[in-house]
Length: 510
Image 1 (cartoon, rainbow, N blue to C red):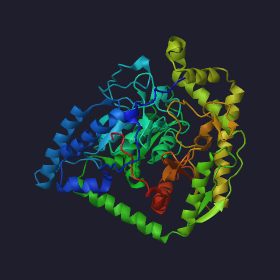
Image 2: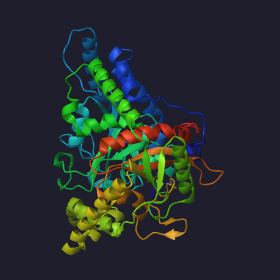
Image 3: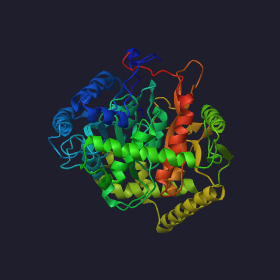
Image 4: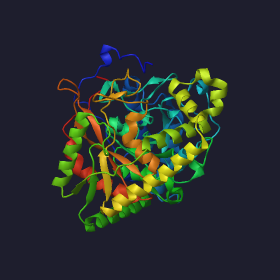
């Protein structure tokens, strides 16, 4: 199977001094509140970036900019009235901020393909719950981000829109399945992006593109599951952003919609969010010395040499900043089989009907997942559920016994690979059995249901002649410890900043 044709010579980018306007949520909100620029001007800035970069990268194949322009215009009038004291009508904390929705999520009146030719012209009648919540908080939906067919696989390409390219090297994959989201963020086409994560789909592309992606704790909120089984907890939705602070804003919009009601002026939101930020900083300053459980290979998984070396550089950087590094990781038995079992069950529930009616139109790996699920017995499913519960207890017991703030190690086991390669089949000479085995560093925590977050953690070169490629550090916390994990990640993010600084961003349009 071929992911995509190689880009023309003119599209083979070289490292250059290309730069993007990198705006964060807090400062942008303050400037909008003061009237230093308008929502329309902010939208125009992102629109120009999309026009310049999206043709090379294919991150957002579907756009709804005209509708977003109308919403921005209405917001500008309301914000002007707020500043002049003529209106007490409120807005949400994300008012006016450009955002893209993963093409797995329904968007009212906007084409939603799920990456499948079967749905190439599908226009849903209403927004998925996650989209509705983010828009309710004020964000401007400006387009849909590309995804693999039915989000199956961590290489973003499909037969509807083609492949999304990694902005650090156009000949390589951006990962997936929330790959379009990661690329749109990294290149400032949007300020915020959503995604979903079954095996690795928020963390994997975040690592490959040098942004922040978080898989929240698995928990039951049926309204946020738009598939056939709203009581599923293996696949979750979550946020992606360029920084932990921005990620927290989107996390709150998704999981605390009541706390993001459009009932305040933008100035009031600035005051409230600043107060919350200062409280977190004060709490962190009183915190004891941070203890991080660290493993370069998550207990023996195959990991590419360059990734292992970068993990050691991360550990050294953290230790130099006063973090106590505790080497080690508990041995998790049968986690691979547990994941494959639960993944198969998920695909049968979600796509078993389409398999019966449109098998010939489904991607081969989607068919494989469904057929693996159809072979399962009740005993195998029950055993996988028991293993899942045991893994959570074992990991949490380890963190508690070692008094750890988080576990840390590589997000991905490999560097971004060639766009022609649909998935990794070998790591440093070790053959992998299935097309998802290279994602084990992520899916062991998906199975356990623990919150996991990928941070930019510097760069590595596959060879001296090749471009530097991003590496991600994955942080994992105990179940329901999402906010504590974000607090820890925000501190570690600042410590790792020197590892992310040396490289200027390549310009795909050059």
